[in-house]
Image 1: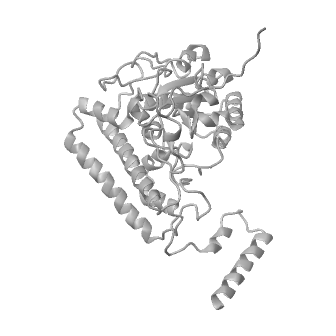
Image 2: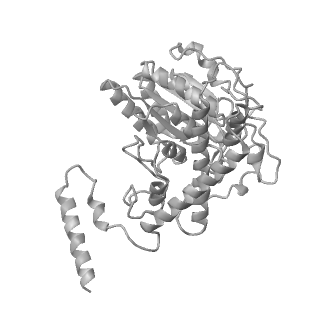
Length: 415
């Protein structure tokens, strides 16, 4: 007698076992064809199964997706990735030392943000997730301002109203990060639809993790984006783990996350997320498609979260120790350094100098950030600012609450 059976996905390796990445389907560098950005869906479906790669094992740029970036642009991208990693390392140490309450590193995922930003225009809108600090850094936000948000001090861009790492910047077109998973996807699609209605030459890009694709917001976003041909780039960062949950639990088993694009009628592209040139090229392709009115693109960036999910996480409890060293797509920073060395545009001396420069930059920013207030010492945020920016015009109830607080603070000072 045949009986139905429940299938429970299992990670390929657990603590104490040998790392196993045999499930990762890696295409040869340069093998994937590059269709025209305005090609019909039938001519792009293969991109959701293959993997777009530009850098080969010898760090040479090969194939039709090579964006042919100048060495100076590549060096700028490398510097921003190195600065992002230095910032991450410093803030992780600060949390462990009790200086900040919480942090999330992007180690191994720097190209996902930095390369994509360089392929877009500064006027394009971004709706990041909470591991996209590379976007903020490559868009020119000051490290000290990011640190002040983590400290929730008097220079906190969020005025004490957001959790750590939930940055934003109106000037740099970076929407506020949300701790609620996947909310940024439909928000990005809505923004893109509005831009199209207004006839603007601006597009939008947004990011979420593989685990967040299980949220309903992800599917709402894809549906609306395709129906209305919204000028938006929808990025799924498949870093293999949603905290301690392996990516197959969100549906990554059998078919790629990129394959959900064609399922909704839009191109889906699976790309090597640790290949700076490939990420840049695919983002550029999707941006051209969006700007010409051809509609949205779903991009799956195949990468690996080398660090813990956050400072509250211990990955040794659910995956093999040092598993990141076996990741078949390597480290994005090391790979771009190798490419620049092949071009004669990077040396060991430059490497040491830039690394030192990044560390000094971060350390100096940390010293400055602390002058605006720490978790334990002043100056402190004025509690009265909680009533600012809530509504465009102050409501009567808000005015009463503001006056009540002022009275309470006055009475407390008189005691």
